[in-house]
Length: 206
Image (cartoon, rainbow, N blue to C red; front, top):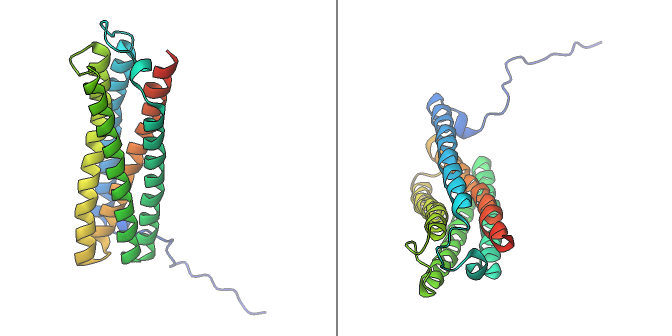
């Protein structure tokens, strides 16, 4: 009977972004950044829920929130999370063109989201609901606006990574950047789910 040999030197698959110690440390550091950012958003959520009824005679959440707009924003951002995941998948397959293509789609969806959010804010201001009107609106604009600023940063960041991929292709450095921006984008989607629930859905009920 022939002897069965086992190759003990075979290493398990390791994604390219984790292939260097620097890459692993940077990714770990970014997880810590996301944890700190979660604390920031938790404080903003708590403040908003504390002041949701402090309208000072101004418009309330029921009068301001448009179901159609925040539903479109939600679907748009969830789809962008899927396309961002496809970009990471293609990056790990070594397909540079497909990675760039899916990042561009994600970036466009992010711009659509920002466009709807700007339309929402503009409509509120035109109705006299500004950040100075009441504690409710102050907390609303700061919470939702902070998320929108994060999305805008993600769009600019993604644009820079697309340029680097086009110039250098997929390597241990660009793959790490694609992976990290993907983490950031998925984090913003998770925050939006909380926003969708705690701000818009609760605001329509209370």
